[in-house]
Length: 215
Ligand SMILES: N[C@@H](CCC(=O)N[C@@H](CS)C(=O)NCC(=O)O)C(=O)O
Image 1 (tube, rainbow, N blue to C red):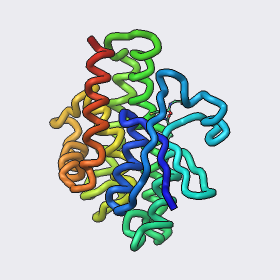
Image 2 (cartoon, protein in one colour):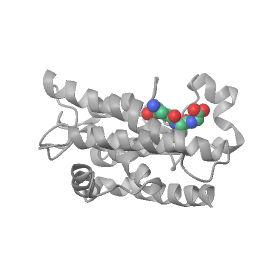
Image 3 (cartoon, rainbow, N blue to C red):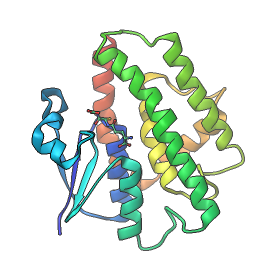
């Protein structure tokens, strides 16, 4: 059965799903949603996902949105083992914490900057938004202290989710490598892994998009 992903390449959460599919070796049919014309607000799309967000995954009768729910589902259903989302209660709790942190802190810090530029026409980052981004980076730097990856010694979904938004934030506010040494080391490590190639095309589109908004 074909797995369908409604997405846009620019979207960090959509790119987290593409990277997860890449690492799991799953074939996904990608269907781009035209947010600029409001396709995501159409009745058809809102019947699928009343929250009208991308990414949304359709796997037969199963319809899931929110990247964190999607990537956990993909590993549970299609992973050859549980390494990306370990069943061990304590490790999974840590992965879950990082996933919630990505969704509620890091991604939001990127989104508020993008929205201020796209909807309000701001050409620069407000002090408040800059401080929010720095706070997110500071938290992550502390989480990564003494750890190779976001939830320990092994790569998990936490890294895949976080690298989608951190790589995007890095486009807008380049990571201060002196200040956030753990984030810089982790970002170099994760972005050198083969699955990261699934992030690159959309990230390049995001760069072009942000350059247009900032100039
Ligand atoms: N927490 C959600 C965030 C999804 C989200 O906000 N996606 C944006 C694009 S990056 C979107 O669909 N915006 C259109 C809308 O909210 O109507 C996830 O991880 O999937």
